[in-house]
Length: 202
Image (tube, rainbow, N blue to C red; front, top):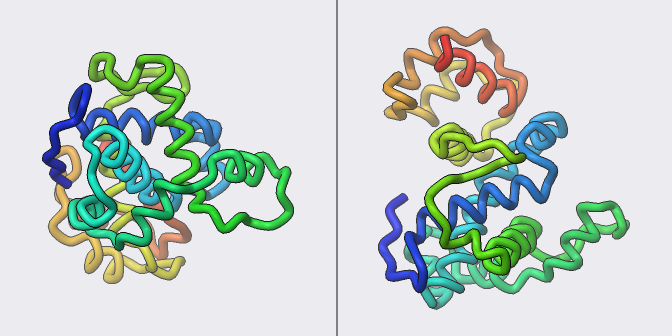
């Protein structure tokens, strides 16, 4: 996704990546998301990070944000106006019912404020999760895979996944070649990401 904008203090993509990573930190880190099978949250968090940065740093309207990201104006507005306090109360188990707020939006807003107040939003290009620097692409490909398989029923067979992911190249490897080496059916999105990761490292 190419985002062209004139931010106040830096590169929109880099700032959105930082907000995305900080959102994952707020949720307890990537490992926790994997353990709780909440990897499907990643595309929503990435989307919310872009909305928050485009709204606050590039002064884009909801209509412009919707056009840039390929989402509806309503979604952009719901993300940007989410009540972060209610979202945190929900995540920490203090609310019995899920609030009407956009959960990823509330988390991204919290992450943005934290980075902005600490001055880290505009610092360097390093992206950190759980105290360790990581390669942005390690998260980037996972987000793209999850976005493409949204709505797929699991367990899933190879044909379905190939149809959704065809044409992708991850770290120089064709997705078709990677999928060829996995065992089917794939039980969950987390299992698919793990299989791709293992294949990339082999």
